[in-house]
Length: 199
Image (cartoon, rainbow, N blue to C red):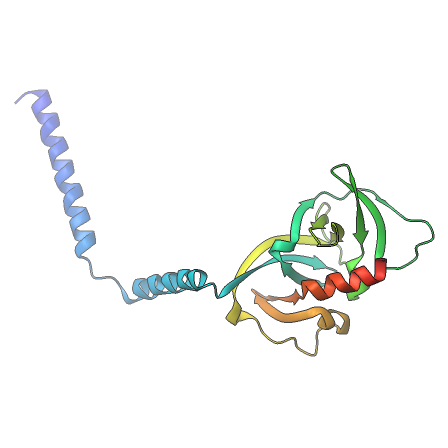
């Protein structure tokens, strides 16, 4: 037998071995845990297909994790200088910030929501969040940004009495998120309150 014949025989053996491994895999009866995991994945996909899910942009102000509808958020940027407006002393108005060459009103959400001071965190965690508000772009400084979080609507819980009063006023519900809770904010109510404070 030539070297090429030996090579062909070896390749054929490998193919046969591979086919038998595939056949064994296909003939294997799935474990109960595998079936349960597959069912959970299908159920999660079904939730998204039914539209029983929503998406929130999650960020932190002080000790509070909060969420706004993702569609409202235009972009997240590095912090930049905020230019205070003379003769305007409302705590909810930080001033003006340059966003891609356009002066944008920068608001202070902690002053409106009374979330308190931010705990000490590693440098560079704070971000400027730009909102595509109907009356014009608004920006605010977040102490930390997680980004978009998709969740089933059934996971949303009622706002507990332990939530800070100012946050509770604007919250539509609370979303469990690992060991944290995210206060889901009513975007229309929040924007209306900001418009009244800064106009």
